Image (cartoon, rainbow, N blue to C red; front, side, top):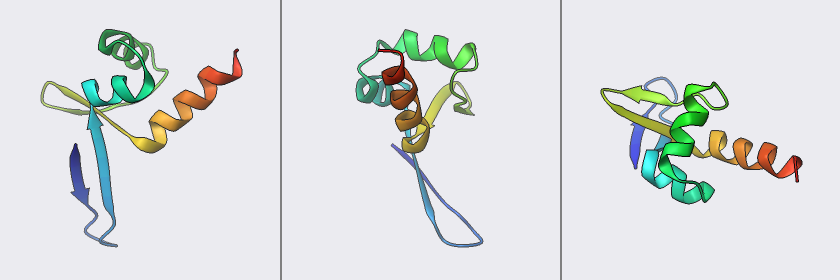
Length: 68
């Protein structure tokens, strides 16, 4: 988990790494990496890591559930 505090409003933004996010979604990490590469979800890239916030992950869950 990675957290950032907004300087203007003091709001805390939390991001999960690739492994945590994939586990949350029930996906293999490489599948989530592929979704990011194809533009289905836009991660925060820090050095060599991919980070996702809960809002993005919940939206991805919602869109994947609509196709069922």
